[in-house]
Length: 519
Image (cartoon, rainbow, N blue to C red; front, top):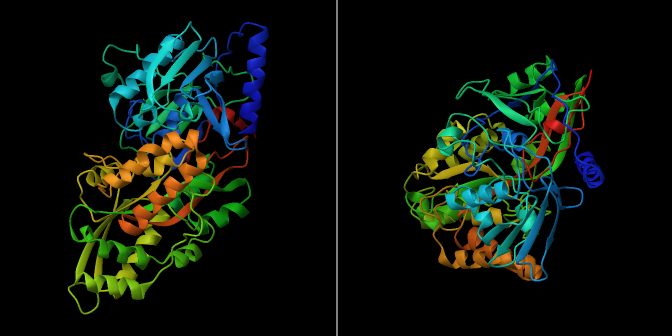
C-alpha cells in the first residue's frame, strides 16, 4: 500500500497550496477488472449494517476517514487528511479532504460525516459497536469534525475499520433502507454500482465514478466485475484464459501451478484471517463441555498444515500474531487418547453410545473441505458420525443464527486491526446471535472484554493480560471453539496488473483504483 499513502501525502501538500483541480473523467474502453470469488459477495447493501463478504466491493465503493497501513502499522489519511486527540484520549478532531462528493452528487462534508456515523451507531447491528465509546459528534465548519468519547479508544484506528466506518450520503433518498436494498450505493469511492444480479455468477458490476476526488489522470480500470465461481479448477482456468483478472483463493495444488504459469503472478503473505470451528454451547450434544473438549483434541492440526502445503499457518490462541492480544505458545495438537477419554466420560466414544454431530461450512472453500474430510475420518474412529453440509455462505449464516448445527466452520478477520474483534463479536454474549455462533453466554468473559478497548489505549500491558485471560476462558474453560489455522493470503492474478498489495486489515480486498492495467 506504499504507493497509495505516498500519493495521498502528495495530494495533501498540493491541496494546501492550491484549490483542488477539476477531476478528469474516468477512462473509457478499458478491459474490466474481473474478480473471481468462491462464495457469494453481497449479503447486505446498507453500509451501516454491512458485516460480511461485500467488504471486497464496498472498499471500492465507500471510503473511511482513515486507512490502516500494513507497513507503518498505523492509520493513514483517506477522507481525513489529518487528526489529533486530546491528552486524555477522549476528544478526537479530524480534518476532512476538501472537494469530495458522493456518487449522488451531494458534498461530503463534516455534517455528512456526522450524519453517516450517527446513523450507523443507531442501527446497533453489524459492527456498529466500534463507535460505542462515542458520546457525541460535532461538525465544526465544513471540513472539521470532532468526536467526544465516554472513554479512550484509538479512534483513528476505529475510523479505518473494514465495516461500520464507511462514510455515506444519508440524504441519498427519503427511505434510505429501501434505496440500499435495491442495489444502490451512496458512497464517495472511485467506483459506483451499475448492475447487481442477485444469486447469479456475474453477481456485481461497478464502474468508475467520474467525480472521484483522486482523479483519473493515469491508466485505471473503468469497470470491476465480481463473479462467483465455487469450483477452484474452473476459476484457475478462467485466469489462464484471461477471463479472470484476480482469483482470491486457490488450493495449494492450483496455487503451485499458478506460481509457475506464464502470464500469471502470485502473492503469498500472512493474514489476520483465522479458520474457526464454533461449537454449539447452548443445546444438543455439544452443550456438554466434555464433548467440546474432545472435538478440540480430535482435530489433526499438524496433518492439516502438511496437507494444505503452505496455504495456512498454525494458530496460537485466538488473535493472530501481529496484533495486540496474540498469545504465543498455544499451538494446539491432536490428542486422540484424551479425546477418547473425554467422549467416554460423556457416555460416548468407543464402547459407548454412538454420537452424531452436524457441521456446516461454506461451499467452495477448498481448505474447509479438507478440514471436514479429515475430521470426519478421525471422528469415525471414535464412534462419532459427522454430518457435514456445504452451503452458500448466506444460507449457512442464516442457519447458524437459528442454532441449526453443532459445529459452525467459518473464517474470521478483525473489523479493524485490533484484537477486540475476535472476542467482542464472536464470543461475547449476544441474543439474538450475529456472529457469536457458539452461542456463548458468559458474564465473566463479558466483564473481561468490556474493559479491553479502553486498556488498549491507557495500559497496553494490562490489555494484553486481559486478552490472555479471555483466551484461557474461551479455549480452555468453556472450550467454545477450535482454531485449525491462520490463513496465508495466496492470490493469483494476471501478470499485466501492476500495483497490487495485500493489506491484512481488509481481507480479500483489491483496491482496484491503485492498480495499473497494462499489456
